[in-house]
Length: 378
Image (cartoon, rainbow, N blue to C red; front, side):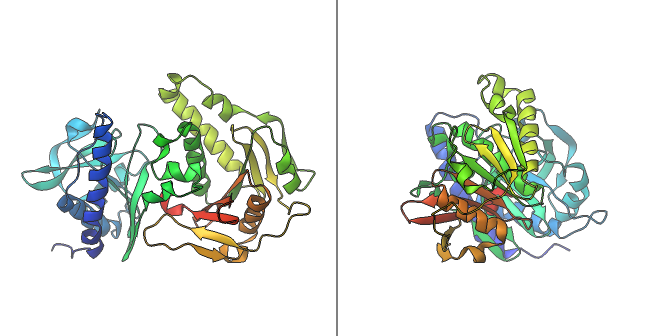
């Protein structure tokens, strides 16, 4: 018997279609050729609906975690193509899941004779190709990639009857941190966008290790941040650790190689791992690591942080003023205090439960702004 329909699939289909149509049109206007096919509402709805019911099944006791990409085999680079295309249904997806659960592998889906079918697997997809990832039971993320190397840009999150549509207009708000702009897919409008993308990788890796952690990003060459840190630091680094900075200093041509990308991933994971130690990791804006496990204190003669403006780049989400205690535990409180005392720095905090917050002083609001971005890091 066919599965019942998933109402959220129909609710988001037209919104997602409009997003892809808008971004693909802009990319074409810029002369880009490496673009995915603009998805139609019916295909979007069908893929989301099928993936949702597949996510509720169990294959060998595990929830299927798969990624579906809407594109024909000819647009997928070196792909693995099935002799007989498979039906797009929950049972078939759950059965295939163990073979394609590793990151970076997508099941290719395309229309044949008016019916959506699974044609094979691929690691290569064009920019702005519709991708649906099954993250967990009943948890789906619609996304696309802007560049060949880098994190996908999330468009919508669906969890049961809850729908979150990412508001990419947040990137144009005053004082929007570069990290948030990059997560929203707007890094191409920024000078030095590649540098910001490194913070995206670190943020994703911090969230992935599930231990919780804090990263303080301080201006290169500045010593002012030390006034907010308890001395002596147990895990100060001398000389400063420059591996990530050295990688980012390589020539543009070398950065396109697979070897450089793998080296970058390893370096990012190593730094993210340091954040799991109790305290905060300190890194400069040029990616030199100065310390980890550092204890944050209130800067002398500065007032304690009393309120924080909390925002989330989700449609219809209203900013809310909270006390630091409402945000979380000691890690969130100390990060908010650091951002208030060090207006030219930034604090990133990952919670064990998956929440992720960027703390940055806002001169416009005259208070710390806490940007909740876990919806962009799934």
